[in-house]
Image (cartoon, rainbow, N blue to C red; front, side, top):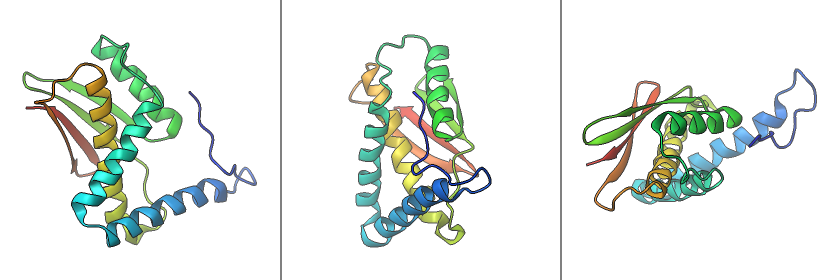
Length: 153
């Protein structure tokens, strides 16, 4: 599934189309982060993440390599970086690198909180669709510029 920026850039060297959407997302993240309690903001962004995951159903995948390839193709189409899946004894860990940066640098914290919730929701939805049990949880956290999403006990 290929996605295009909306609105499209006006010129090859002009990123105002992409920047306009990114600016709107950054300001939305900041507004929610300033107005809602942290748990409520995270729950909202997690719900958005489940919607993001629903755009690419992965419930037909039965191999970790194929899962990683399909998720990477999706994030590549969105220009949202790449992942590495690590399957452990009690959890699957997703290492998500090269996530987009906010277009307004001083709003970085709100942007990172938004990405945390969105990716936590997306990966949780995908793992649940693959048959994850109710006792397992999904938790995302930043480790420098890489987000780690852990799904397990």
